[in-house]
Image (cartoon, helix red, strand yellow):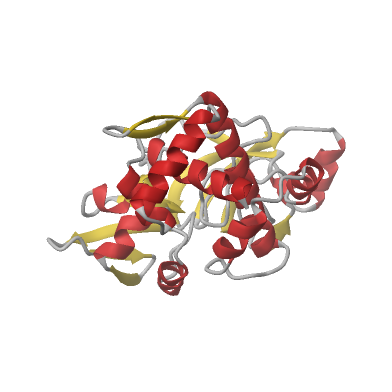
Length: 304
């Protein structure tokens, strides 16, 4: 139990530290649901173990050892979330609380098998980066949805909260990672009006605050387009097939499915670490992610 509590503190401190600051005792008390005196006692204990640097006036930051421990917990948590949704079929609003319990199972063989089963997934179901087994974490460049301008098109990347109620509300509105929306209107109370395809969506300030996104690049006619694996296309976007990587036997498989150089391929659904559903030559085809990762396309940002 002491070990679990330690990991919960390290995870909470990392979450706050990753925003560019330190974790105050008041923040930790709110986040972990404990009293401030209890937080102070725990922080002194963690400092004595070399896991944090703590000053009562500035709060707590993780040492290198503390960061290593925190990222290990976060990796297990997000791997379990992905397993619970992709393999066990649980809805994404329920997996956070279960993963909070499973993240403390620190058995390297179990963690390794999880990663293998999931195909070394790099994001959790909510779009947050999964640290790799060496403790490296991909930089998250997503910005708050409310920071974008009206008429700007953005790609939803992540939901920055595990609250089940918020997640259900977001899902009911059809918003999830890799969905492209247009900001229609920003209101003074922080609420937003969006458009996804031809569907209008209204978001309260509370929902808008937990969504993270990136701008959708606009390419000028004739501009050089970016080459990318087919697996990286977002739903609704198209690309022109350029070639293949990997073993030579892959070429035959691709040609037999109609993936010939110069073909226009449209992404219909991208299931993150799972398969992709695409349209090529007016035929819908489901591809395993391993194959989609070896098909190179020239990305087009035009949604059709």
